[in-house]
Length: 429
Image (spheres, rainbow, N blue to C red):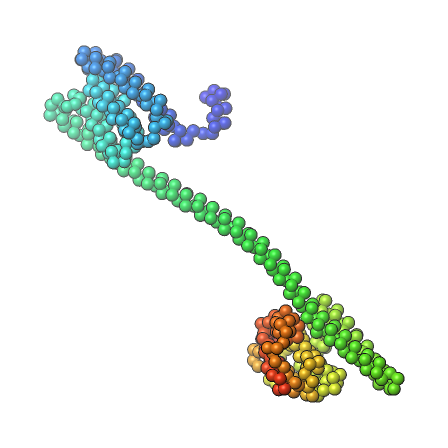
């Protein structure tokens, strides 16, 4: 191989089997026809009569013209078309005639073994192979076609059976390879389709994932806003309400009873310090101050006792069941619900007595807050106080739902109010 060939091979890559076959089908017929003609011309004085020479001299140029025509149209003609079938049949007839003139022209006839599958439809492939086998067996039997005597007939029969068997075996192998090729093509097509669908699904999943991340981030922000709003309502708002109430008392009694005014000023200062501490803990999402040094029953008892003293209302606290350590989040939720229920009783109920019961019931905690106040009609409440978007009753429900719990309210005008919160008992680890 010279430098130019090496450069072309490097540029185009190694020649594939399909490319080699394409070259054979393009140039092979000319080579085999030329080789058969040359050998026949050399052997003509020995095995050809004058009439055989004349017939071969006419058929060989006809075969060359046929090949030249086919070489021009083969690229534009679909496989197994009528033109392809015409070419195969005419070439086979010419090859038969040339082989009758000189057996060495079977070199040209052997082409039928190689391109019959490309030129003939599937139903005619075996017929084409058998026709080629007849020509090849006749050229090798010693007397041409038809055989001259019994010996030639026997030789023809044996050779034809050999050629036919071999061609049928190779045809069967070719059919299986074609089926395997089609199966591989179908498999590759199915895999490409599956890969395309997978890529599409991955792209859709990536979009959904990004959307879910945005929604989760927005939900987290909204949840944090609700938490801070609820904390402010339950701590700062109630603390400021208490401070205002104490200062109003100071204003009304300052001239008449300085000692009482001083007592209420001390209470206002204590409420301010407590509210400031609660605000700091809310910002840092820490447990309420009442739970820093006491468990849930102790914190509830102090909260109920302090509320009763400030409101001047009898407030009783009871614990039932076996007391267990409770997770900080569960304890904080019940404490805040109790504080909100007491605040509602103090502001709206006009109650003279309030009772709170904390019950440990296996895997559940219940908190009941009951008062003997005026009660109310739940259906008459404005939506912002009923729903989860407000504070008050809605805020208590939102807190309970955050820890997989529930809040139920039983009340009617003139019959008092009962708030029951149920949450799972998550033990402190």
